[in-house]
Image (tube, rainbow, N blue to C red; front, side, top):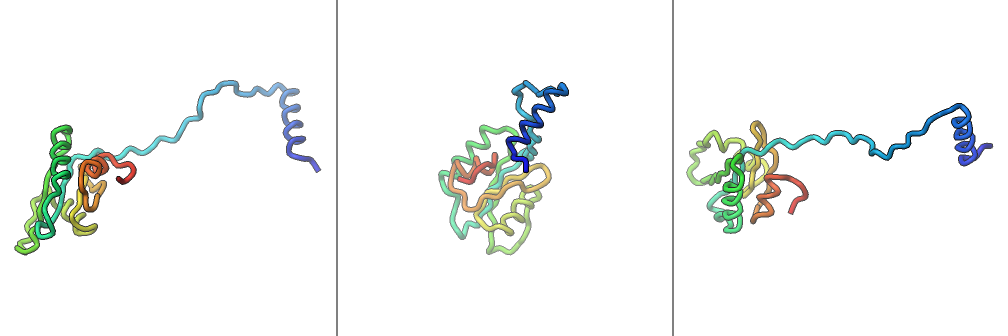
Length: 138
């Protein structure tokens, strides 16, 4: 029976005798391309005023996000559950659907054509950054 080290030695000897070449570069192997996250174009805070207002730290973080990112539209949608009118402006339609599915209050980050992330019960800057950029949840 041939052991593994002996087999490797035999293969190495055979390769050297026949003129095999071994790569001598130390360049890393190519890595598979990582899928890129869709660009966030809208960030919406959805809540019901009967359950409380917007946390002050979150209001400041949302305002900062709007000022620092000219490409992201920031909005606040208050769903008045007592009126029953059910009229939702088009720009908040997907955010409201996500909030109905996952719960309120929430921060909804959208790309041009889909909801990308939903952060339940956001409280401040870390939640806004997560909604905009992803990564580990705060």
